Image (cartoon, rainbow, N blue to C red; front, side):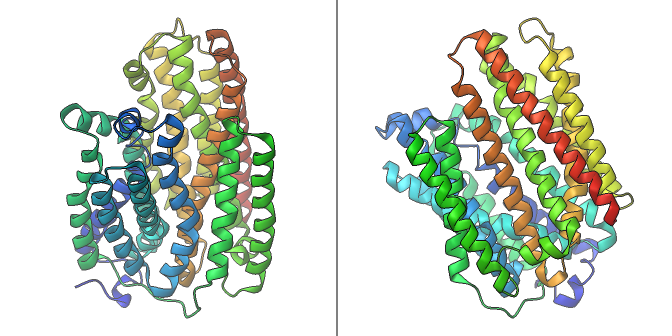
Length: 462
């Protein structure tokens, strides 16, 4: 039987806590992993389904779009119907959709399956932070957040390697079929061990969900088009539509109690607003570096794809090591101080990375710079997430969790678009790649410094 509300009021007993975190960890690992696991197989999928590369890219984009536009609505449903219920339905939908992807024979079928996976993944990612708040006592919330960051970091880093390992022994449908048994295990554990949480009494606002989807959908599509050289008029129309829908969305949220977009919390609780803004800037900085550096080392340094993967490994490895340590520190020290110092280290690491000559640098000379970035990013993540989740009322925990995931995805989407725009200015030569890398890393360092300033501002309210 799942834990009752009273049992979850200040965390579960240690014996149940481990199993509840296992339920959260397995599902979150799958949902985050799925954001990148199909990338490696994309050329094969396109060839077998007789699709162009532009058509096949929707195997990736459909998942990301579905996740992003449904995070806040799913978080609102979690506050209304219970985080455990939304989480379990998310795991179930994700698992069924994974099997649907595995048996797809046409590109439209696969894209539809990926959309369903995205909705299921949003059900998982929108409320997992809220569940952690009820799994761990408040005095150990940083530790729980640190474990969650560890899972997210590990799954992000493992995506390409896991995909390569599966494809080495089987075909692309197994990228999705292999997730089904893990989904069933996660669902069973979730039903039995996740805590029941308090529910809000407000109704679900369907117009807000639609406005949220239009705003974020047009914003992401417009940024993607801007980075990939689509027609200027279309891109301007998409971004203008996003702004218009966003204004209507925000105006509606100002009249709702409570709103789907927690604008009341963003206004009334500066720490919540600063933590969300810090997340957007920090994740944008990280994704800029992690997307541009493979081009730098491969085209300017002459490394193979496998060598590039090995060269970049120190960054996620450092995050994995640092996340649980930072989580424990966050239970004792100011998140604004820890996060700001971590982002300072990350900015310094980015500057040193921009100075390394890709063609002549030895692996140790590159590794220590990336470790500095990873340690800094890991030191930021857990304290920031803990403060963001802990700064919202218990009955709005879903809103806090949804805002945490939305901030991360908006930052990553913006950072990816910036890299695409910078690369669009190059013509494929080594010299132009070096120039583009220096610009992109400079933007990333500036974004990290801005995040550092926002993080330190939070010390005024702690």
